[in-house]
Amino acid sequence: MSNLRCPACGASKIRLAHRKSISDVFLSGLTIFPFRCQLCADRFRTFLGRRTPNPRRSFERVEVSFPVWFRPRRSKYPDESGQEGVIENLSIRGCRIRSATPVAIGSRLELEFQHSNDSFPITIEEAVVRSSANGAIGLRFTQLRRSDERRIRQLLDVWLPELLPSRR
Ligand SMILES: [Zn+2]
Image 1 (cartoon, rainbow, N blue to C red):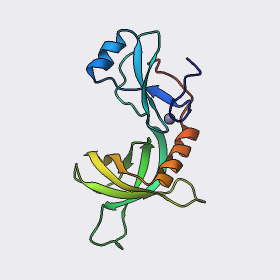
Image 2 (tube, rainbow, N blue to C red):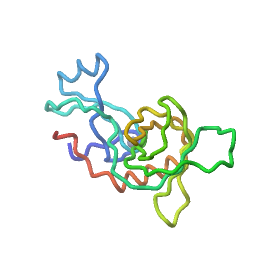
Image 3 (cartoon, protein in one colour):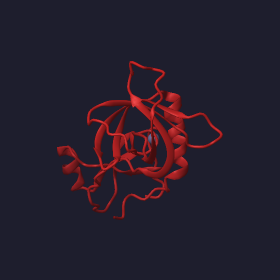
Image 4 (cartoon, rainbow, N blue to C red):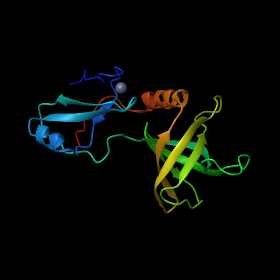
């Protein structure tokens, strides 16, 4: 179990994935579960040999605290400075922003965040707002340049703890 790796990229940062299809449920009976690579998002199935609860999320979000600037995607005013916030958690597929600015669910944003003082900001070309309540904005990334994705992957590789196919 401890040497389970992503078949696509070879990373060991994998987690049990949420089971939703009929075959997911059927194969669970044989303790064959879907997994998600946390770094390249590849989904694959493998035999675990024991039962385990169905995780709510397929991508574990790491707790972070990065300044972020965001604005509507393809703003009519490209020079307009963005709204400010703080990224509170991050995965390869999305993040949560803390900000006082209200945004509409379903709207599309572009964002830029600074994960260290001595590197260029990382840009998310497009993210869709999935939730927005009490100053917390839940986002799913829908467009991301390869170079930015690679940098997020490197961050997650450092921040995510090693393999723990969910003992919860
Ligand atoms: Zn992978």
